[in-house]
Amino acid sequence: MKFLLTSGGINNKSIHEALVGMLGKPIANSNALCIPTAMYGHPWVGPGVKAWEFISGKEENPMVNLGWKSVGVLELTALPSISEDRWVPLVRETDVLLVAGGDALYLCHWMRQSGLADLLPSLQAVYVGMSAGSMVMAPNIGEFFVGWTPSNGGDEALGLVDFAMFPHLDHEMLPHNTMASAESWAARMQGPGYAIDDQTAIKVIDGAVEVVSEGHWKLFSP
Image 1 (tube, helix red, strand yellow):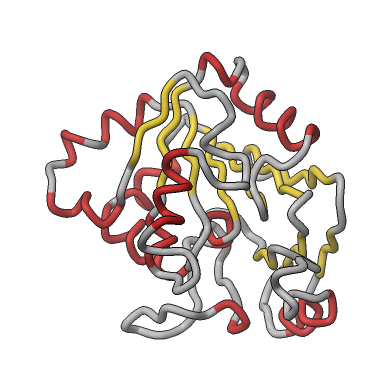
Image 2 (cartoon, rainbow, N blue to C red; image 1 turned 45 degrees about the horizontal axis):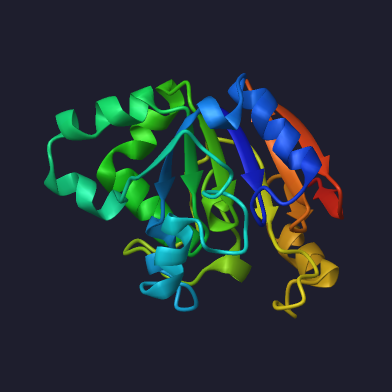
């Protein structure tokens, strides 16, 4: 897969151009599936109106409302109860997965339970994450971000990229997401980590990492 891991969605021209380049064709010719699952695990964003806003493209963070040829919904909590024949071909045929923010460990749990986690490495689609939707790709998320807790505890995520992410750096609505907090977070991580603001994304193609930014970011190396 190709990964475009954002903090706040497709928020500027540079990130938008990166997405189009990864798709290899215009957004208007691309089919998308949106995944709202992470929202349900976070007390600030779901369930309820914010999940509907994400799915319908009514939220402020540009993602679903970019002018896709089509947009469908892939709800991971439902997938274990239906046949893989009903959803796996749909995922294999889509051009892009749009994965909402929320709680990263809740999303990780349902990616594994649904079988999507096992499917992801074989897909040709572009994976676009926002906040928790990006963090879930890391080996772990760090204690700072643990909210919903899996039965076995810990902060382990999917590990499909080899770095962790601290999103929403210096966001006005998140007073604890400061550079000082990011430095403290990074000091407790085992591997590299990126602190990124909402004007920044991380592009990963075949393991090659590129930061796309019109804002502020910092790489912390162990």
